[in-house]
Image (tube, rainbow, N blue to C red; front, top):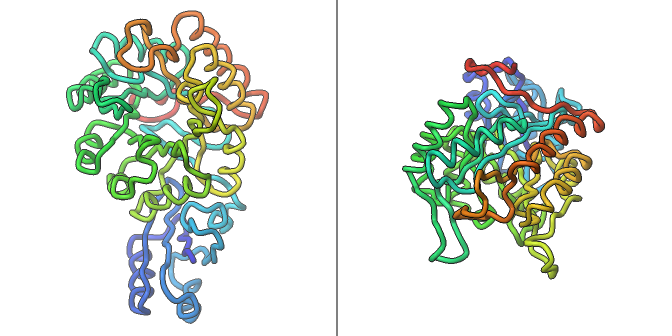
Length: 353
């Protein structure tokens, strides 16, 4: 069961509901998003039914959710929203229905020069958010693991230069505060999709969270992972389909394009696609981007590198030169066909241009 608060509800209204539920022996988890505050209730549903929650000040509706993921379920958007999906804003850049947001940059931060060049290439192609990894969990312990805080400082400098908000990965719950002090959005990678301590810490960070689907995870497990973030008070979550592990060896992963509309039907969160890590090859990125836009993805996240032949991480899938020109054309034209517009960059005050 969830209590959906009205947009004009005050903090006192929220705490009044929490106190009422706790007095009845239940637990109340407050989750705040851009548009609305939702309170998830855990306990005796029959007991909650005697509390007249709908009559409490600031309450828009009380909804019984059949899905195991209560806070991110599409069902709890019915109250006053007619089942609408959420919009998540990252440094003023919206991700959600009606728009198509391009997130691009280097898979790994290597040097200030490389990161700035990649950011400028991405921005010229239409990207409004900069992705870049300062912490890089790798399959091999001998592979480049990222620059750590030095990489975060480089990203912050590039943000100052370009105005692009930063999306970067956090891999350890102990690092969440550090990464959040630099980043505009925290990314949880596929290997940590069920690292519940990390998910909870990210939920408490106060920053939007991009949650990649686990390489072996079902859609329900993906949504349940998002529930861990939401239960800690954060509804600003973007799901990212990045390909799952199957028997097929022709691509790095198998892009489950059907997961986009399914996750959008089951949950209210924005859903984007990672064409770079799913295909693992430069020649697959543009075709998979077309498929993502056509199926209704709310955005794509793409690797860019000025010199992919010398990249320390995932060079074979990074776009450069002619590929980026084609990407720029693609993201400016194809979204219109499916009733979307390319997200534009906000000005320095955070207002979309």
